Image 1 (cartoon, rainbow, N blue to C red):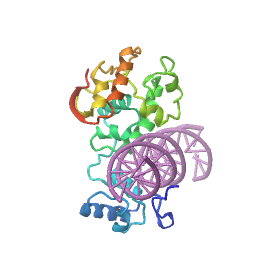
Image 2 (cartoon, rainbow, N blue to C red):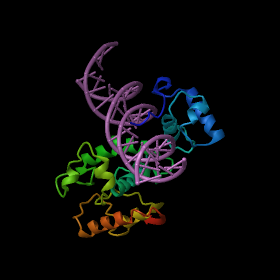
Image 3 (cartoon, protein in one colour):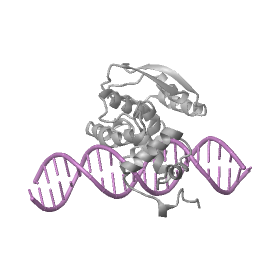
Image 4 (cartoon, rainbow, N blue to C red):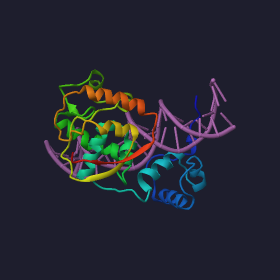
Length: 221
DNA sequence: AACGCGGGCAACCGCTGGCTC
DNA sequence: AGAGCCAGCGGTTGCCCGCGT
């Protein structure tokens, strides 16, 4: 049995006060991030380290972009979700100033609903009734990280892409998936391709190497 | 005006994987 | 080799607010 990450008796929970935010911000400005476990004590906060980390990363960091998502950001999230599944931190990494929590919330509250309305299964980005793989169809409602994170979903639809170039760095794994059949980005139905299966396998084989490749992708396709 | 309901968001919880000893 | 620690991640929860009745 693992020890709790902190002494729960002396720990504040719930919403952060302005004073707490200030203490954490001041501390990190002076000492920088890192060693979250020791930060609460050092900063004079009655919070657990995890809570401090979350507050900083999702709310207090100076480079966070807040407010509504632009259309091109939304398009990018959809495309990346088709590629990466529920790997929110990876998706957020491609959206400067956005946090994984924000992206996740936005997906669950806006995009997911929107896709369902359009008759697209948000879990596999395919139309609801057809072409659903057995393991994917079970994901309706509660999708498990197992089904989404480990199995790579292949992009089979496209949004009305904002006609912009995005300079994004991808891991080898991601770029393997991207590199061949070109992203069908028009919310149209793509027939399952044997090519795609082999690419998925290839991607999994390559996943050991996380060496990042920097590539330009043209989202106009 | 009061109430219920649903959406949005911040925060928590528990698991995982990497690292160290 | 394996046990323990830690940061990071994704899923889930709970609160708040706006809207409809």
